[in-house]
View 1 (cartoon, one colour):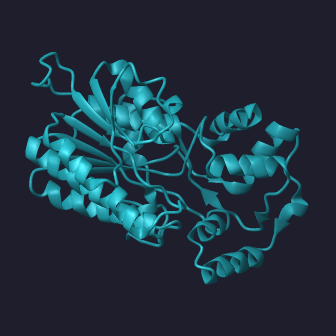
View 2 (tube, rainbow, N blue to C red; view 1 turned 90 degrees about the vertical axis):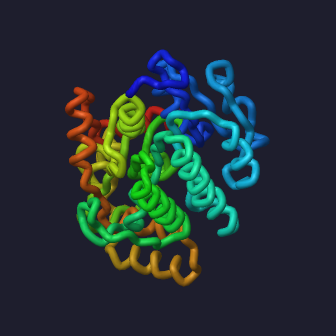
View 3 (cartoon, rainbow, N blue to C red; view 1 turned 30 degrees about the horizontal axis):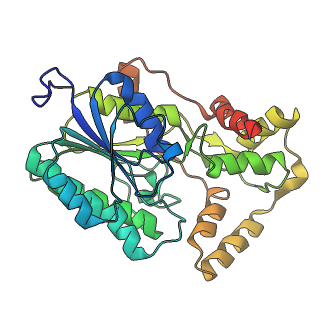
Length: 335
């Protein structure tokens, strides 16, 4: 990273959002050893135990990303060289669209304005969800159409638009789009998959499905790279494991690790069952259940060649979902 005039010792003044979430927490753990001066924004009322490991190593300010007035006031007197914007209101949460917009889009807009004004760099954590839960083309790539199939994905698309326009006016920004991420400490889709396979509650579609997950260490490596390296403004990368994996092969691997044998074949159902479930979820306008049915009945994978080329140059090993998912299996067993 270029020497920072603010500290005078080659270290940067970094602002990071989202450190109480799975991704942000792990990214912070990854960049702390680099020695930079780090500040973080945290939602007021956050349980102190979630911050205990960081409180003596970083500066913490309690501001919600949805509180645009407080955020603007804070930024007016701030001095940062790099902003890692990871925080967001995730999909599936019970919140109004107004709160989603303020938390995910308005906060991004304010951070973009700050970076433009102060010549600071911005690294934004978006999502492969900008292509929709199921991309229109496979593998989804930089030229693939965006699909706001739910409001969370819409907010990420809008945030990317704001950043893209600002780059035309001199903003130094990079966008990182992770796939569904797995690792110790998260209980999202990969964890629930392990749990359901363990309890023989996961129904496998009788169809070859390819899915593309992202090991948390792969995502952390991308953010560390963004902190340490110079990059061209406008760089956008999809981040996921080296290759997609067949869903039934992943389910069998999980079953073997938990029960010593492949998953029972009688728990495989015809695709009609899944299509009916998705149709019912759409009639109910339940975005969470729509995505759940789609994720296990349709293929989704991404062009990650640029990311892996960058990591290869840094001699950072690639991750493969099999056996990488073992980290989730071990976490599940520990719980």
